[in-house]
Length: 249
Image (cartoon, rainbow, N blue to C red; front, side):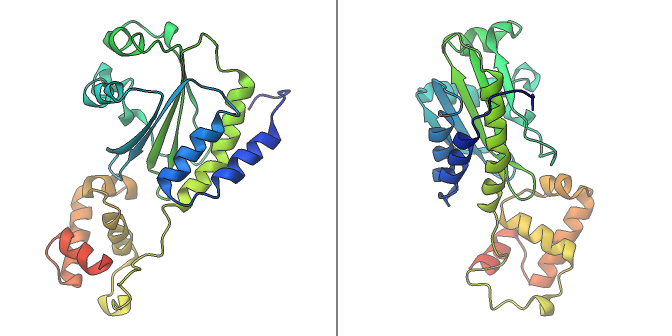
């Protein structure tokens, strides 16, 4: 964060406080968009909601025609060596939020710029991601400007400071008491799952694939599948569907 900036602390506080009253992911995210305009004005915006495997499962568009999002998700997010793809959204570093700024006139000319950015008349974009309790990006924001006006240092710093706090609120939306809602009948001492197996069960319940579980827990796929096999045996099930039915009722 740059020194000697006139940071709008009161506005940042009000943005975070207002968003904190929303306890549902979609409402929380849309509220963020509606309030961030007070810190950093923009002309268009979008939110992509990601599942535990990094796939887009929902979206919210502000002043953007759905055709552009469909075009991006269907094609442009997968080309240019992933330069502009969602796969580039890294796992959380636990150090600081990453605010990405694009000055589109300075980007190297390519198909994406000619066919997607210029027809939308985009000049600048500011993007960031919010993460779940496992450090997986789950909500991605893009704030776009069609006016030829750069994001100022004060605006970027204000967004950074707000996102620093909003990310913690966002994590809380993914926290839940494990194995709740109809699973009180399960006696974990009897089933005797190890701590690692319980970690894997919780990730399976969140829809995370075995391949991504391996990455999250820094273990091999072979080890992950071996743990899953042990879990199935102990829970007396033969598939993830049966496991979820038993755990989640």
